[in-house]
Amino acid sequence: MKKKNILWLYLFLFVTILDMVFLIEGYNSYRFFSKPLILVSLIAYFYQITKPISWTLLSKSVMGALIFSLLGDILLLWENLFIYGLGAFLIAHICYIIAFKVAQKVPGRILEMNFIKLFFYNLPIYIAAAFVFYLINPNLGVLKFPVIIYIIVIVSMVTTARERFKRSNPESFWQVFIGAILFFISDGIIAINKFYLEFPEAGVLIMGTYTIAQLLIVMGIRSHLIQPQ
Image (cartoon, rainbow, N blue to C red):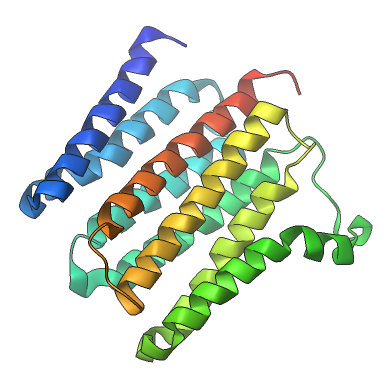
């Protein structure tokens, strides 16, 4: 890994810790600067390591996911823009679905899939999503339909990440899959904290799982690119 590239990861780590400090200490106004910088540094890192393949569908879809995640991060800084932030992250998840499909040795064909086996493999994810929806459903109001669509998309993102098992090198699979699971957990905490039960540790848990998730997904795609396929 080139030294000039790893500097972006050091910046990512620094601004993530800084944002956590601002969050814990209640310096919310400072987070308008620290929070966007988290994804800006990760975008810069990904751009640097993918310059040779910058026009491939894989690089463009991951970059799209990161950019829309950055937009979502910014929008969620304002409570009244929650629905727009939700929309930005929905597009980010769609971009990740495309990336995870492309980052496979041999993507599965629909006619060759065992849907019963696939259902049981994904059942824990379905149960977790259904449980979160069960908790938040009474308080969703007019947001019920957008939230249902969002849940379907993020569940699809996680199951697509799981689908890469034995279709990429193990390092890439586990980094991407764990990252996708942490993204799912982060969004679940957001939903529970906003629509079911607000709790003081939510902010740290949300940002902690979210930043690790984004980093692991990027590093997992990197592992897919640099390891023998």
